[in-house]
Every structure is written in C-alpha cells, then in structure tokens.
Image 1: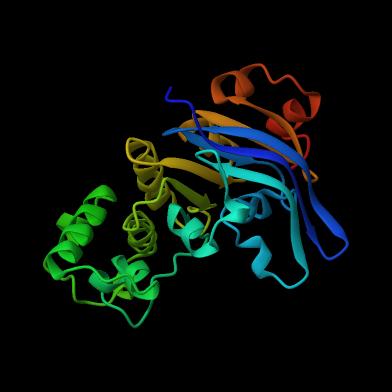
Image 2: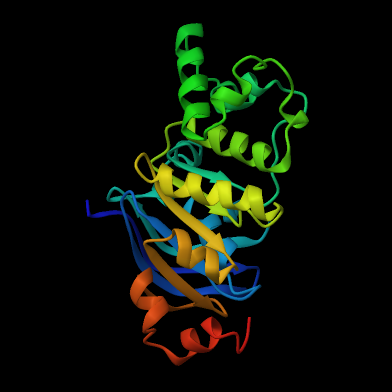
Length: 252
C-alpha cells in the first residue's frame, strides 16, 4: 500500500441551514478502490462533490473542514485545478452530444483552454480509450458522435474523458445505476483494472457491487460516517450494529 492520497478532516456540508454531512474523517488510500455506500439520502453524493469542490456550485451550499490532496487543502486551491486532479463521472452517461468520440475524450483540455499539439491529442485519445477498453471498438470511427454508443459504451467514454486529464483521483457516482447487468459487469471489470493508474472513489447503493470491486468501504448513514475500513473486514465482521443491519437488508 502506497499510503494516503486524500485526507478528509472534520468535513461538514450544508445546504442553507440543513446539515447533510456531519464531521467526516477518513483517509483514502492511493491506487485502491474505496466504495462509499449507504441508503438513499445519506450524503454519499454530497461527500464526493465536496472532494472536488462541486458542492459549492449549489446556491446556499457550504462546507467546513478540510480535504487534503497530497497534503494540500483543496479549498485553498483553484477549483479548476482541483477538478482536473480529481475527475468525476456521473450516474447517467453524459457524452457531449454534438462532439465526436475524439473531441469528447479531449474535451477537458478544450474547455480549460489548455493548448496541446495534435500529436499529443492523438496520444491522449488513444491511451484514454485503451484504458477503458474502447480503442479497438472505435479506432476507425473516432470522428463519429459519441451518442451512437450503447449506454455502457457511453459510460466508458465518459470515464475516458475523465482519465484524459490524468487525474490523481477519479470519483464515480453510481456509474452503473443506469446500465444493464452486462454493461455493469464490464464497468466493474474496468474499475478493478483502472486502479493501477488512478485512485478510485465509488459511490454505490449496491452492496454486492461494493463487495466485488472495492478494497476499502465506508458506510454512511444520515450524514455520518458509521464505519470505514478494509472491505473484506467490513463485509464479514462489521463493528457497528447499523452497518450489520444495512448489510443484511434491515433498512436501505
């Protein structure tokens, strides 16, 4: 284990007066998959949106506490740089509909006004599509629109788009909830393969998925971090009764 890449310290999050996260503390290990699970409305998505400073884009939203990436507080950094270092993929696949596959992959560079040579663009597109196992399927149709893809391919394209910026951390917000079982299983295989390159934080309400793909798991319940540790231990001998009740389907 190569140590901690991300440290969350005393993090609380609010929408107006309503507190949705309460004093979260956790250390995310480098180049591992950390799953964040818990029932709907427990604050999972808010937590990862605080990590890459998207939470504050909501009017009236605020955060207290710190999120340290490689020892630097992301709340003192330029949010654009934070979102380059900490990429995000959403629940619904969302390739840019008017763009080709090629332009979708390098969209982050264009949107941020980062100029790179054509050779560099070609390399990034090829490497990113290879990482998500799409290159062989699309290398002859890079200039077609990404929307002709199936849902599972579109989601892999969105992951390639995030990886193209060479982030240190990749946030996946229920990336398979809109996909069928076959596409889901391909994305799960992909998540396992990608941790060679990048640290992954996966939000899922699917307990079996968390057990299959994660190295570490956090259980959130009504805005509190109830338990966090190696997945094997948390799923076999949870320390907190609430974790056990959630895992056995008493609530969720």
